[in-house]
Length: 191
Image (tube, rainbow, N blue to C red):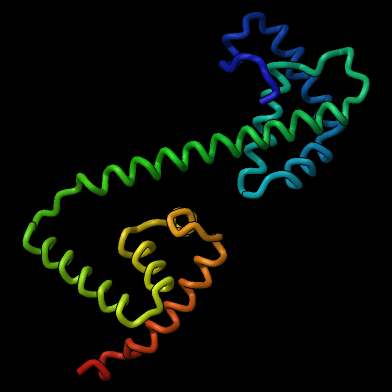
């Protein structure tokens, strides 16, 4: 964010000082609020986070008011808002990565209530993957196995195969199209 130590407003001490800071931030937002919002919308990928960033930026301006010696306030605001968007994106990515790592660790510790059922599912999955590998070209089969057999996402699959994510998507699309040819569309065709 634009700096300053994080903490609640009540921890900042003098209420008069806090009111003064809030008033200054409100003046900035009255004058430049539309521009701030436009900068956020231009820089943020996830539009649902735009309002949160806008509100957090107001709080950051209260925490650390714009220095009085700044000549180009628009330039300062542009840089500060852009930095806030970058920080928010980094925090979101870190959080997503932590959750992903946690989920990957947890999937190995989950114990099914029926070990026999789990063994049957594992065996059926292996047979299905072998069938897929025997009916698809090597790279397409590899993508399907990585994606659905091992549960890797497109990015991880691309890294493991040392190809671009778009190529993984193309392989996966082609593989699924071919696999649909082998699967009947309704239950009547199965019997």
